[in-house]
Amino acid sequence: MSKNNISFILNKPQLSENIGACARAIKNFDFKKLVLINPKPIFPNDKILATSVGAKDIIKQSKNYETLEKAISKIDIVIATSSRFRNKNIKHINLEDLKKVNFKKKIGFLFGSESSGLSNDEISYANYTLQIPTNPDFKSLNLSHSLIIIAQYVANIIKLKSTPFKKSNKVKSASKKEIQSMLGLCIKNLDEINFFKPKEKRPKMLENLRNIFYKMDLSDKETRILSGVFASLAKKR
Image (cartoon, rainbow, N blue to C red; front, side, top):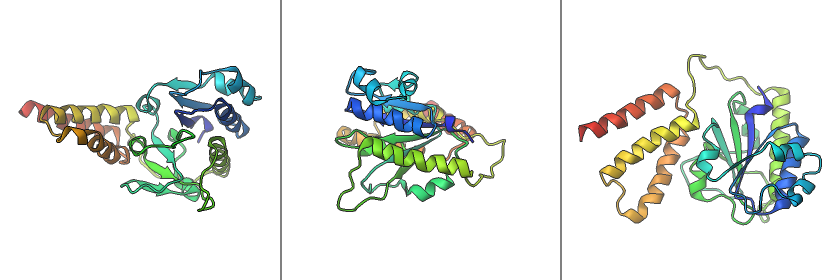
């Protein structure tokens, strides 16, 4: 179990001050990995570095991606934070449920932009959604405050050692990259048979497909089998 397995992912952050404060929060609890997706401010900049205070090393070694899909390609479990309950077929968890997460895997905590949070399409890439308990009449939390609450809670779990998962060493979970490849093959075949009808519903149908595959705890073998099935179906046409 290692803190190096945990990434904090900021999707389209808008304020330099929040990015710097998030880096500081990450270092407060001895985590290392900050990931950004398409930040609005120039990254890095002087304001980000100034507000990170003693966490400039976190900023300098952070990763910056253009898309969410690329950002999570090497992460095993994505936990999306949201102040709103989503009426979707995805497992909703609370802070206490984090004790059941296998932190030996690569975990990514995904945070939305300050103005709009995460869209349903972005949520569809996650395995779970996590809601921090707050005043029901005032749920909105500052980005860095949300991150520091989760960072502190997870640091305590790791310190106390979470409940070990008993799973055969021969079973290797599929990476997000393997799932993306398999899903891409599935979508390609569906496009070839004009499955997505009408066309304007295609984005929503893709969102639903991602919800199905990303929340499943597929092994790498199962992912290869599904890829083989999709490839075989294409040859039959």
